[in-house]
Image 1 (cartoon, rainbow, N blue to C red):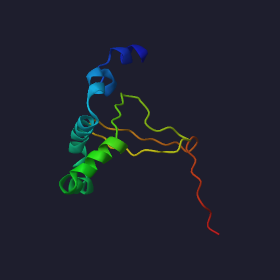
Image 2: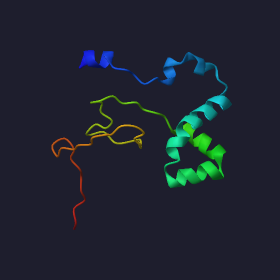
Image 3: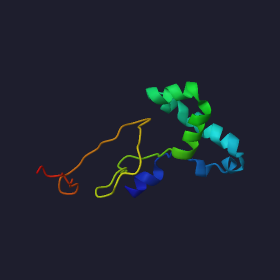
Image 4: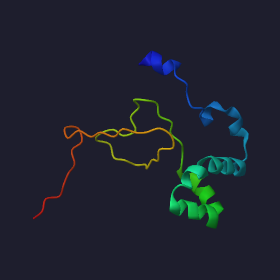
Length: 111
């Protein structure tokens, strides 16, 4: 698996582009928003915001969103950990599986 991962093509991340570090804050916010907005526009509420208040959407993209690139067999969630983020799949697919032994759920009892 190590050899396969080392030879596989990788998605370009912002850390790999030093020129991004010299952008002004305004330009960085605009760029980040321009990258994410096409994917957000698929959601009806966020699409309305792209039309009604573009500045708000730009701030949302900059302050609360980031891209995560996963490879085959990567884990997005781990049993026993509390989920702190929401995700949307832009390309590809995810396989979610849960086993009762490792993913217990506390259910309130009816009394």
